[in-house]
Amino acid sequence: MIETGSLGLTEGQLQDAVGAAARAPSLHNTQPWRFRLTPDGIELHADRDRQLPVADPTGRELRIACGAALYNLRLALIGHGVRPLVTLLPDPARPDLLATVRRGGSRPPTPEQRRLLEAVPRRRTNRRPFTDALVPTPARHALRRAALDEGAWLDLVTDPGQRFELGVLARRAHELQMADPEFVAELERWTGHGEERPDGVPAAAGGPLPRPNATWVLRDFSGGTARPDDGAEAEPLIAVLSVHADGPREEIRAGQAMERVLLTATTHGLAVSLLSQLVECVDVRESLRRLISGTRPPQVVLRIGQGWPVPGTPRRPLSDLLLPPETGLPGSTTLHVDDRPDPGSTNHHT
Image 1 (spheres, rainbow, N blue to C red):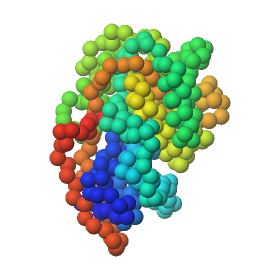
Image 2 (image 1 turned 90 degrees about the vertical axis):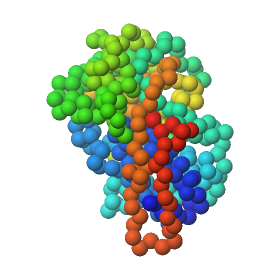
Image 3 (image 1 turned 90 degrees about the horizontal axis):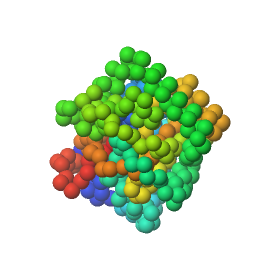
Image 4 (image 1 turned 135 degrees about the horizontal axis):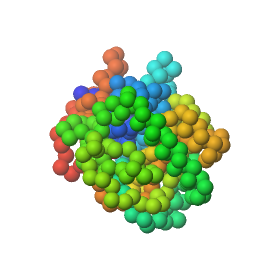
């Protein structure tokens, strides 16, 4: 059970909003977020039990994932006519309370927001090869504008020299990580599984085995069970998303911008995967910063192109995501969570 409050939504609308938030992408599909409904809004909390201590020791990628969930939550509330009023890190005494969302009035969604909201259940992380078709210029402009509208920058790496250096950095980061037994063990715990579970990346969504000389698709998410790659695209669009600085607030901002970019890509029929190794290795990330912007720390690296439909990844039941209501808060009513599968929903996304 969770508590409803002054957002002015029905039980079904509240479930829809939290469900949309939970469809955000996260590192290895860990889904490191939880939510609490209060009398005056919704709280977003980091779930530290789902932080990856080897790949993400500082929690930076956890906060980016939670930022993506926050963007989806904002979008879903707008879809229900609520103008979301967001406060980031509202309580210094509770650093894992990343955001509170309250009602800031009423606002109908714009046509663009409707398109983005419709893209939430269709978005996928596509780890398979893309076609060699180029990303059209209007779509490139739309992706960059999506990042700017959320206070971030999206640098499209088109210079041949920069792309070559970026490929070298991606290979170096991959080799460093795969030489670390603890990293490999962590990767194997969360990816390539065949059993039914509500998190992680199943083998069916892992894509093909990367070729030994691959430049961009390097990680094996299939647990070694997939067929070899028969040839990845030669020139995917590589984009680097950055914000002003590091730190929890900016990382949450980066996650919101990332999700807006990903949903914008979905509305343009584009496929996207993440090149996380470039921002997980400290030295490589610093080299990437010098290569791309010189000042702003890179937060996310995206591989973008034209692809084919791919299966999604599972999602935790809504009841697992909801923190119990705080005691002593007046004005609440009970919301019963229905975790039965919805035949019309798409609850498998990464």
